[in-house]
Image 1 (tube, each protein chain N blue to C red):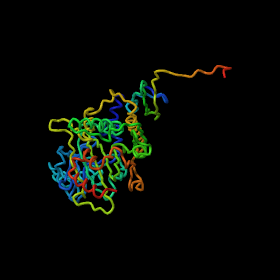
Image 2: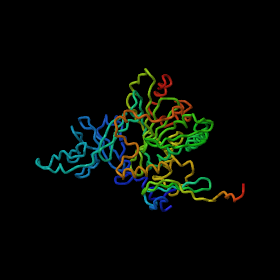
Image 3: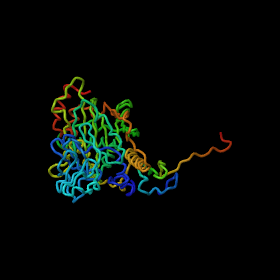
Image 4: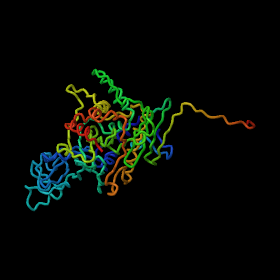
Length: 416
Length: 59
């Protein structure tokens, strides 16, 4: 339980808010590269700001404010130029920095355009994604976390826009015990209701849990009944990469799985499940798997009910039923919630660092540190011990259009 | 929890943190003070148990 004002500090992401200022010190995905192959613009809402991502005729990317400052029309319908995007309404053109560079119907000697500027933010490509940085200069480096940077890899990305604040989604990742119930016993119950008697590895009881801050966030560990402390689940664990990514391990396979919770605004989050599969040595990646595969993850059925027969759908049901912004003034936390409390404290500490003019946790400025950031993740995760196909079809990956290709490929050749 | 046990600053400000949680019958308050960065837990003691001091001459 905490006060309303503290809950607001930890959940308001817009410009000028303490958390908004902290979150603006990090890079966020705003699109997949393939999204801009067949179109010129994509409307983006990030950290409470309405923006337009565009590709100009030189192939350069830009991210600028959506509204033209002239009369407020949307630049999402803009005309791409050699060096910028032109408003469809009266032709004002803006470059990637947000500077107005042309006002075709003003007098030729007018200097008005020099005084017109909109927001323009940095963008960079990595791992098939386009990332944006909305914070102050100098911008830090875009972190080359392993899932984004390993090669060669098959990459897939599921996505959903969820009507909730990002914090309650992140808190779920600091709550290891929920897996035993939500993805274990509840999953078994749902399967029983469907006439399928089943027992899943997730339902094994937690003996203890632990949380260790490290250079990029918090490492979460669990010891399950019957496991020794040498098990990967306890010895290695997996990290919450501060402030918005969960990296999950695998069941003996060389996969990289990120769950990214990108704050759209105070009450909406773009949830991206980004997986990279590294094939074993000498395996050529089939052509149809070479580009990032993007797909939507459904979480409501035709009646508006939650789809809870898969793992991520179960999580989404819990996050959304907590309300748009979870009411933390009326919660009853227990000892298994200490990871959640640690994450809240970490957010407060990092807000403080930013206010002191310091870089917050995980911000990287040294290129030598950023060649390839290998995150510690368990490679023999008990929860995934039932095999690649079984686990893949119980996660949101079951909606991936190339899931059968992935399963067939890795059944025969394996992964690194 | 209204004041920091370390520096005395107000704790009911937006950027300090007091989170209450429970452990059996104990209520605990995880505190982070934005003024001095002190952090720690305050425990609401239900029962205080102390050992009796040995009396002089007792072996």
